[in-house]
Length: 213
Image (cartoon, rainbow, N blue to C red; front, side):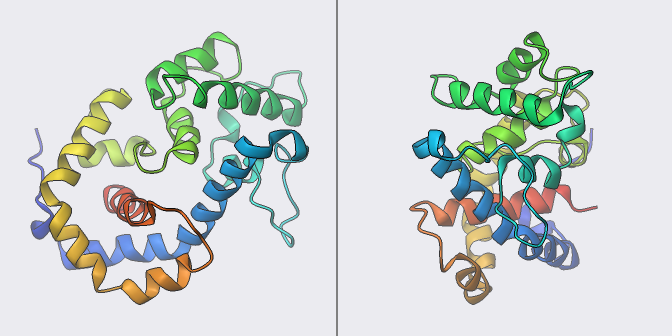
């Protein structure tokens, strides 16, 4: 089994790579999260939230998010209009995030498969969607981030246990490191009012660190 590196053991070039990936996508992530929150509060007034927006007038819709995170193809839309299936997925998501199991990625993945919304038990898709609802406690998962912790099985509960342990162990070092780029983060975050922005910032950095080759 591969030995996990402490944060101080991670090469500086790998930290810089992670920052580069983060700064190129962070503002978009915040827009997606903000718009999902708005949908939860005013869903009935956002009739086009499940549709893809114009690339020259991006509205950061749910469909835009699915495309950006490359998970639209995981939706089972055989003989159905993709917009209709995304609308069904969005409805199921809203119901799920309002339940007591809102952070349970593994259960959500099984639920979507049972309802024939996804092609299989799509752990990655489920984690990325539930991340929108709770970016403080849910981390997206895919094969690349699993590889960081040498996890063979695609089980979200195994992954989040490793992530939470890593974050607890190296929180202070990570926070001090990111403080060196405070002005960059503030420039991106300036128009957002999330009360837990510090945690979102750290989580998005860790996601990119685990994902970076």
